[in-house]
Image (cartoon, rainbow, N blue to C red; front, side):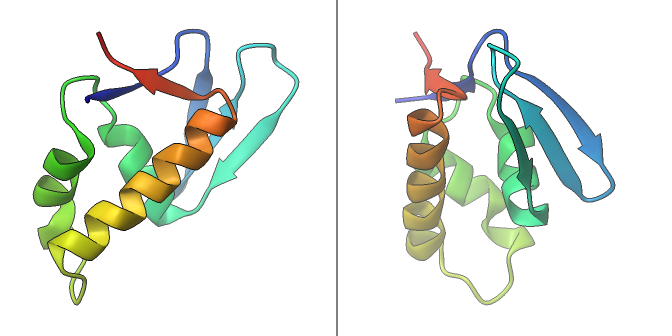
Length: 88
């Protein structure tokens, strides 16, 4: 299922990182460069597998299936924090 950033979540790029503020405005999260790249690609259209296929060329030395598993784990942590949701 496609994943999108949750409505009300604000974020700001900061160099090669992204700073995210939850919808309630109480929790700030800073993503490292890899997390920031994935975050910016969450368009509500692509699934985890599609994101992995699209991003694989940017991550040398990581096969697509490993990348898909890593993206799924990252998205699960974002979902647990209330920052992303499944797209309709």
